[in-house]
Image (tube, rainbow, N blue to C red; front, top):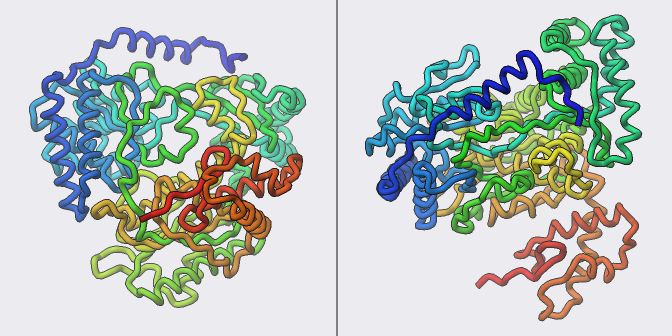
Length: 637
């Protein structure tokens, strides 16, 4: 593959400096092997006590899982275990609490040579983690936080290296900040990574977005340097798209070399030009392309079968991070995680958390951003959500709500549309409860992970759901596989897209009251979501076992066009399954399609069959999906 920029100048010096630092860094001060059990026991006791102080009732399996995680952290810190190990403790069961308790135990037991890094996605989450450490008696002078968020209430200790260093994911993944990897010239004994660890940074932009941006600039500012660059980029891309038809792995592309200073100048112009800055979609597309240029990573042109585009993939996790504990509740359902062969998923007790008191109401309507922003849809969305809120309040006037929306983009302000509609029907969106909590909380997609403080909300509403396009998913698959030549199939891309939707829904739902666990059960909650495909239920079942589902029709938004066809296919599938004798416990998809007389060349029927088989739910239908087929569900009792 052609290198995007020559390894000279500042970039080459930086790479050489990182490699030299890694080679010169001394081995970490390790936890003594004889101290593993005492540290694990102390950390587990601290974590369990803290969880119980906050209203959680711990089951025996819950306590066991906390203890197991603490023992693993101790063994990693001692060097008895190595590598990247993932712990899929369900949301609300104490992953972050366990990490804080581990550090507190290190301090209390006098293991002052053992240095730990904790990485989280957001600075706000790091601030909360620091408060937890202070609450547990860890001195402030031992805790470091480095961030660049202006005006943040979270203290910034800058480049001062501390024994317990808190950093954002970006600083770990960039590999250029020694605070994340070393302390006093030695490797840190342990890195705790909150949420999914991706082994590569990826970026992408669709071909139609590049063409559209180039056409706009050509008509608006034909002589501007950015317009000239976009014209040349479009020409080069067009020449490669045809070749990409026959090279599904992606082909290397060289765009004209642009200095970083020029990239930053163009970004500033985009933000301040009175015409360009008002076109939110254009700004987003231009920034995506310039980000690709600024990353200096090799570029590829790809054709996924569902669209063409430009991608970059760059490995980011430093090899010096040898002992990493990954705390990620979504691991069981996130296909991207499974592509990274360097991560070992540690077994925890099955079904640690039951969702039997959680009710899910899925309205089968298109919930993607583009669908919700088409003509008349913003008003329809506001009315749809207002109807849900009104019905919930009629049953319980004191009920609190957490509503997820898309971020504002141009004139599309989803949260404001919903607030306005609620006010029109007489609902006070600024109301505060007797417990001094806001009755209506609003978050945007991107805030569904790592934020707590919303578990007073017994109703969570997903006003749309974040969906990634084929090109960005293809880039992510390549990055996670560790092979830039990897060729993801259309089926794999679709599977990953679906799993990312499920991951977003699970994490968003887990900000609400179901986060609180009492004796292995999630607290009661009602989840309303807008999504067109009934397969979501099956995708969420592994992480939300026992939740009850209902499919009320949308009141104002148009129903999904897929609903009727998929329902018909499901009915045909169930009729076929009912004809099998009781002793037949499993059937392949191939056999079922043959029995149902489905044309193997009819792509639409194949997709309907896939969706229908994904909707099978054991307690209801007596059958459930298993591998490339179905199996009879186990009878309960």
